[in-house]
Length: 338
Image (cartoon, rainbow, N blue to C red; front, side, top):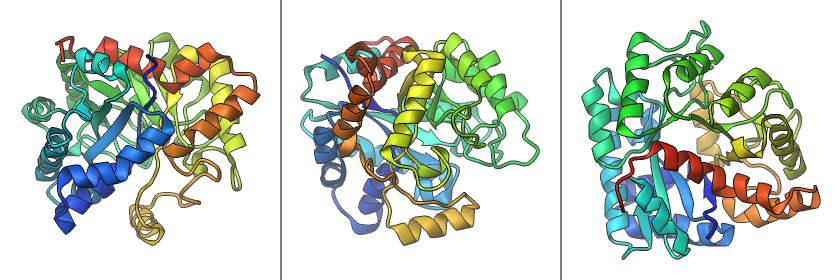
């Protein structure tokens, strides 16, 4: 069976916040926020962010403790789901999703700062179920520079150790929001394919968050993926539509090949006024928060219909809908059985 996947989503923050702030049972919060939307989207696998470089991502100022707490919340939610949900830790867990009646969560953090400068913390997070790290979040951290850092440097010496350790553990390396130099340093260092979990093509729309044609070409040659985002600021000028997003997808498919393009929709889950306040404080570019016509993953059938009408064949549709993500995860994740 086809496993459909979305590599990046911020709605997880709302699930975790509901448990932390309102005392909602973990599975009830997860089911309320995710089950119907994944069913309507035809999704079996979802990137699920449990922390990162901003206090908001971790539910407090202590980033390390926040990630541990949020990994625990997610584990409790999955344990209470009676097999409906699974935390994807290995290739065996991917195989378990093929039946279609289970939903997989790939746990990630957006920025490696919660790990500090101690690889034992990365290993601890791995042992608790974390399987992907978006190395940087806009600014610089102990691993390297993000696109919001004016000096635009690359990986630190520790960052190279961090990448090597992720390779050894069986974790997916994510370069979304990394500077171009960080991207090239990661590509040079990693022995496994990497992904940009929520990025677009600069060749179609020049933006600091988007990958250049040279980056796309190198990413494809290394077996990696660009997982394309619906965040309007990264699609086109003005107020983009679902058709502008389709244009982004088709550009990447034509340029780098259908084997290296996937979905990383980056659906934002919070109330607009709170999200805009957060963006302003973090000095992140503000636009419309949601793409007109593709406001959430449950609109994915609409996207598939648009792609089909633009001549995308069934094999390519299968690859970008999840086949490519599954292939990379099968290469990167530990090979232990489920």
